[in-house]
Amino acid sequence: MLSWHGYLDTAIRAYHALNRTLHTAHALSLLDVILLDFLMRSPDGAARMGDLAQAVVLMPGRVTQQVRRLEGQGLLRRIASERDKRSVLAQITPAGRARMRLALRTYAGWVRVHYLDPLSRRQVTAIGDSCRRISTALRESGTPTGR
View 1 (cartoon, rainbow, N blue to C red):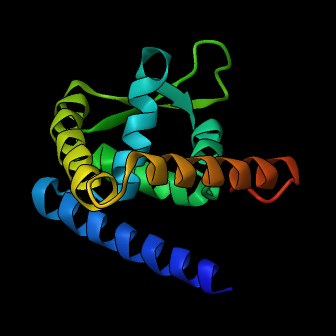
View 2 (cartoon, rainbow, N blue to C red):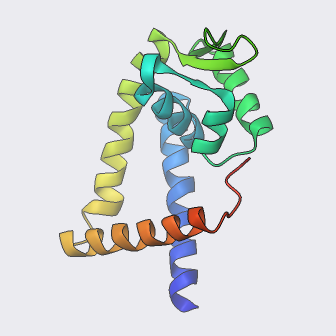
């Protein structure tokens, strides 16, 4: 249990510290960066709202709220799907890509300083392997993923 509490404490502190850093430097939350990064990696920079919710493990209503806020900042837009006119896609805009290029540099720098630098390569690999195993087991068990 001590290991779990150590992990949980670290994860919560890291989330809040990185969130604060991104907000201060780029007026983006960590969730904003995760959503926009998913869109940047998607074909045409777009994804269905439901797929976006599932990918970032959030309830669809929460994703809609974030998308609405990012749309208001001109960082993404909602468009109708050409394949299924009933579906709505979120698509990153050129302004969103530009802001993300800067935010991802800040993100990578923070991860290097606070996660990679304090640990050996072996420790980083062990943490990554452990988290992948746990994440895979949770996915396969049908643990709720925001849908």
